[in-house]
Image (tube, rainbow, N blue to C red):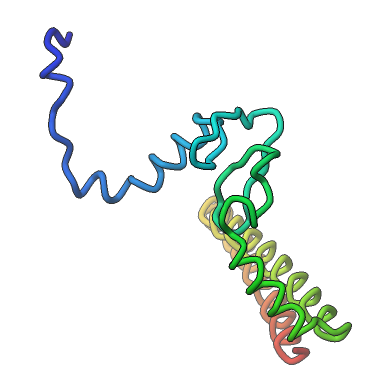
Length: 150
């Protein structure tokens, strides 16, 4: 039981604060649902948007990047899109890359699950280990084919 306020005000180790500062700020930001524009006290729990440039949350009135100070970032992004537009071929390549990334993630999850299941299957007999290695062998050959395509 804490009896004095001075016991609550213990100095915090600065290394711990430095490590967890980003996590603490994110937690406080979730709790604090007011507009991040200086001087605005509008609540953003019902109508509010997160800026894709500065990652702050603003009310409807200050949601435009030009209003709350991200105008230069918007200009840079739009200028880049104008000077280097995405052609149909580039969009298709980006789409294929994203699909390949999803397939890779799924394959890694599957392999991770197989790895976790292996001790229980491998311990029961030699046949279980053989099927697991043949399954892995089939996966290796399919990976080899995927590498040759791109």
